[in-house]
Length: 337
Image 1 (tube, rainbow, N blue to C red):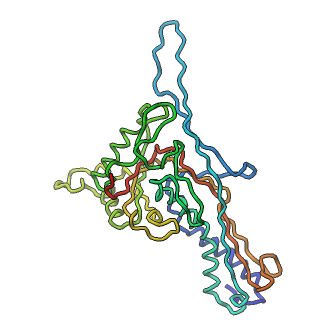
Image 2: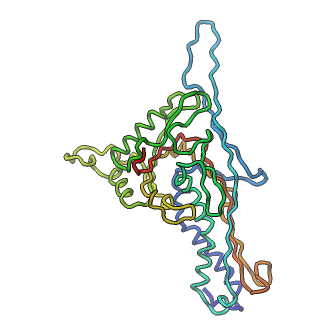
Image 3: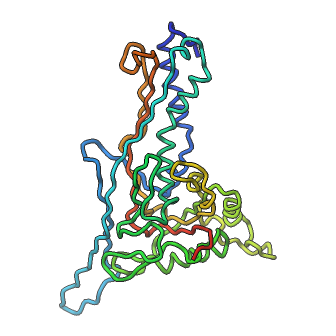
């Protein structure tokens, strides 16, 4: 990098753009890339909301008598859920003194921060759909109310979700909320088998739950690794007994689940874990603006005329929604009834 001074400002601008892009590309987007969230891209000129719902058809054909007309299959639309886009932004400042006096470390810190603030906020918002999935709303770090309900108006993780075309209900929160263990995992799998239904109340046997998510709690993560990677049955005296969970799920760590709305540590949520079907996940994130950074230059509107500061600005826009409780199973791991 060339010397940072008033004679090499174009080099500074060019270097800054290169570096924030590098920081952006290296940023660990745990939730976005986990397979838990279905990622869509939203084009311009389509308003600021999108409505989502699912449609189910009857699973089983009916008898057809000789010469008789075939029965028409039932089609049932599920509950609708509206996604609203929100734009996130943050500015960072490079002072005249930093540019003039070759303060590489301070300037590099600005570049790193501006390249990741929007991505960090998106990760927080995505993971907080699990953090606050036992409630119907939460207040985010901006003081705004965020709805965490599904289309039936109930919280994401619940014991009696409803469907739109039947009086049947289903649960996706394990009774007793066990910590992750072999017994706890089997209890969750049993719950999934007995509660996977469509909008008509028919049992759906085809959902493939393939992702096991946990927080970054060391004990819970180590338990997940033991369950999924052991070469023999857990706690088995016989080394030749196969581990039926080996390769069955892919473990995903979500380090921001056990946090407050402001992103501080919340140890009461450290034992959260669950299963997700990556092919039929209820989590949808629609990205309108992935990440944009405006880089400054002298004598332009990105320079503060009163201070000579350069203003870097990062922006991003996206919406998050969960239409149904199907496709995800959850335990808070706290033994609550």
